[in-house]
Image (cartoon, rainbow, N blue to C red; front, side, top):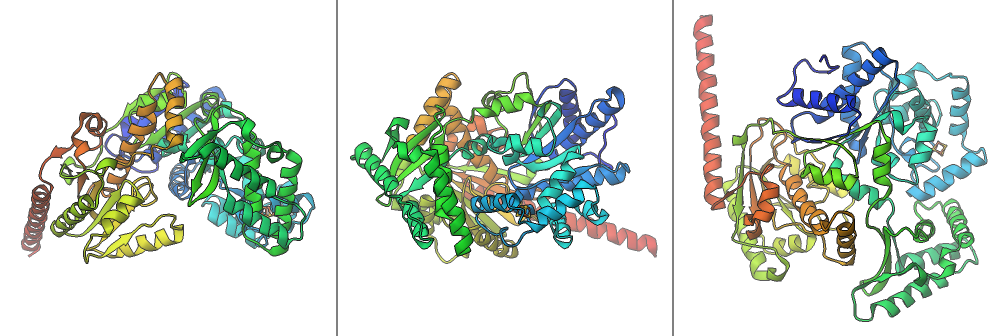
Length: 631
Ligand code: SF4
């Protein structure tokens, strides 16, 4: 099979992956691809799907679309590069578009930096009233298919280029992207466009696409279930009600939110007594809170507040959105009351996104990819995808470049957490640091354990992730860490420093995984386990509690080795890593030794030094030979 592939050479295992994907799509079957970093999943999936689409057109005159979907915008760039590479190499003039959320393509500076829900309200208002000049201008040009070539060319380079070019031509970037999407066979978009049931139907209608003739590539697919659930979740606190009341007072509105205050306080008094959290039935919610007319008035007041006060965010808008979701009586959505710092909080949680399976089964085929799609049959079962192909691939990187060690001297199991244990962990981290010729990253199961251990660290330079840090602060930490060659990075597993991020140039020489990052065993987790027990034949604890924790470990430990020349030690620091229940799930990704971590690390880096010396000597020898020959 001749594939449309942008490079001249395939990487190890990439050939098999291309053929597996092509074969499964040809049979109209979905495929789950569990493949470690370095195989080139993005190129393989795009190449196989695109080759199939073009062949289908040639051989059967069938028009198919391709969606490349990612959880983060930053992951679009590589797909766009791959598409441009193929288009240029084969002179194909491919039509594709990098589609992102409306706000990221909005050229109207009066609204584009507002808080998200306020932005959507104001954008709609402006469109309805004919007051967005950018929208009107774009529509005028679209009507006569009169879009400058410069904008079309910019669109092929990615959403940022399209935004700049649209701004120069004073047109709405989102309207242009939607227009281009109609004639594009390939759409690179975010998960939210497909997985959020409140967005999906209008998105597909706007770009004129149908799921039945669309192949969906899901990048980093291990995130899908959590993200699909998160779009249906929200919370209400006494603090946000008080802020919203202040916003009403500022605009002189006579709307009164006391009924919400009363409701949330009463729910806490009645249901909590001496419990930390309690389940709330829909009948416990006051009728007034679910009244659509009142919710509509709160929404109008929110828009008025944002416009009059030039506010970037609005608690009123947040409350209106929360109340709209609160009325949903689907049994997969539950309501929980709790207290945070002594104040009541009402939370809406999704146990399982029921729309997921029907969406996935309605498409032509799906390609699910991740380095942690393990166990594959679990993902096929929880996504509800029928007759899927399940494939796992080996790492293309030399096994000898990674040393994985279990250090069983400690545990962060809840009942054993103590100042003494934290002190011992801090001492061991420092001992390991001394043996490592460069930076190390330490990932913890929670911020509590991170802070607990950090307190006893002495003198080393440590960049530390704090709770609720903004992206800017995280980027700042990363910038400093990347510039250093003898520091430590402290982060949490499942966080932005331990997943979805590439530490290039072998900047991390050792990763220490402290403890096991199980979800908080709170009421939400307990109810989710029970829900999954019913859906998946008693496998709730395994699917909700055990496997996600191990996936966080594998994700965090995979940050160090991103290319075939990278070399790193990984220390799993907890007694529990010896237990078969964890070892059996981890073993394919992290083949472990139980041993003395300090000695093993010392040997590993001695080996590395020797290797480097040998390489230098060989290089020196080669140069000498060449010198002699040239003489
Ligand atoms: S119509 Fe377009 S340019 Fe105008 S506010 Fe909405 S997104 Fe922005």
